[in-house]
Image 1 (cartoon, rainbow, N blue to C red):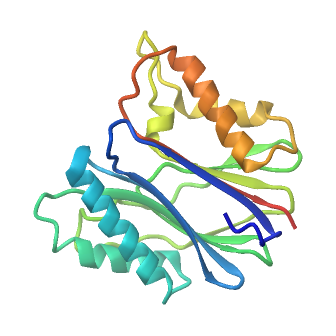
Image 2: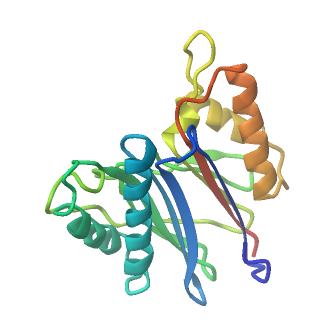
Length: 225
């Protein structure tokens, strides 16, 4: 995506466990220097989850065009979907706004898995925990507004729990520790497509042919300049 933008490298993959999935990702330019990044996971499976996912994704993108604050964006989306949710579904969402000039990332987390950051020196960090609850659960949702910074060469990896909860034949899970170790062992210089492809191959090797039971979605961003 965005082949004309030289400030960042971006790639994402969604592998649904069924023909229709409840995971989603999105990325979009809010303005010339702000990039919106979204990843989410809807409760449930099949068509109902897919429909709820499509509505949530559309609402986030619409709200984001009027607001650079991820906290305000997600709280606004929650205020719309909560009263129109007779099935009591919910969706975890991590929404970030990336400043392509400064490398600053402003984000809010609504009950989603915390992303990993790989620094240029090889160190791997987990984004700090924030107060969070999924969208669609409570009427007056209050999230935290948080910030982090990518330096030149740093990358960030967002994912859904289908990645870390992938199971092998003896019901061991892939878990966050294996994702972290994968990133630590990964040589510098890989583009984001290679990173995601290699990570999925690592998961495939780990599960050893066991059927995928949950959607796996991964989004990765690297600051180039």
